[in-house]
Image (cartoon, rainbow, N blue to C red):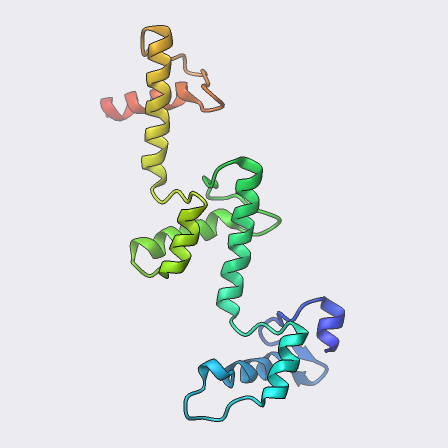
Length: 177
């Protein structure tokens, strides 16, 4: 209760001590006796369970962290209009780009839970960044050619904020390599 009053949440860091008391260890013990995890063993007292819930106790740390990161992604999308987060981007200090990379990796390894994949799909997650970048560049090049009659895009030319000149230059370099 003191930790919650002082910090405003119940996310106690690893090895956290309150005076001489290992609060983090106590919390882990409470999680072990959560009713959903106990089969044929001692379960938490229902009244204690209710009191912890009312306090805002976090039972599933991994799910809570995932949902917090997902909320950051939704915030990014609302502001930017897309989910193509740069690898190094931080959203309010949180490494959102890195988190998305881990979600892509889990999906490739078929380890991303289906409900998480669905949530990401529903807001427009880009799973194959390179493929998406190619398709964006190609469609903008088609527009440029239809308008200008050629594909000789100046190196610094941008279309709708996309650096089409640089994209075309990279395609040429790949072809010549």
